[in-house]
Amino acid sequence: MSQSIRTLCLLAAVSAVTLCADDGTFTFNMGGGISTPLNPTGQYAGTSGNFEAGAGYRINKRSSIIGEFMWNGLPPNLFVLHPISAPFGNISVYALTANYRYEVDRIRGSRFGLYALGGGGWYYRHASVDKNFVVPPNTACEPIYTWWGYACDPNGFVFSQTVAFKGTSVGGVNGGVGFTISIADSPWKFYTEARYHYAFNSGIPTTVVPVTFGFRLN
Image (cartoon, rainbow, N blue to C red):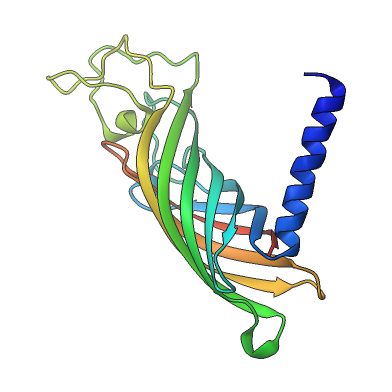
């Protein structure tokens, strides 16, 4: 593709987004914050950061359909007794979801607003185990090994030659509430929200509540 064609495509995309933003039918958000895992996830993971970005269509002044990307970190929980022989590493959760948002844009004519949203989609949990870790022979298959993705034999021991999974894909759901502050007379808002996510991972499901701060268009 020539440089001139790429430039025209980019200009067309920018123009389309601008037109949608001007007529109020396009909505966009981006932000980050802190995530807190709940049980059973909280037994193995600690507090970390999160990032989210979304875009969608405003059906009317109060209703919107939004597609979102989310990332959450799930580091080992250092406040929980960790077996000496258990693995260490990091786990991340990625999600692509479709959500419905209902909002009151301006409460009694003020710059403040409230909204609720919920939906579901695809959740991907990726584990990265310390490469120096080796499972000792006849290690009992405790729940923490299931969390890291190790397999267990019929006798209840961890397969010593099994490498922990790189990732698992499952369905999940989410729901939460948020608060907005309109920025002057522009279509931009500052928002903060708390949302509960539940992914149906086998063995140990993923349960986390990210608290996010960011900016939203419309």
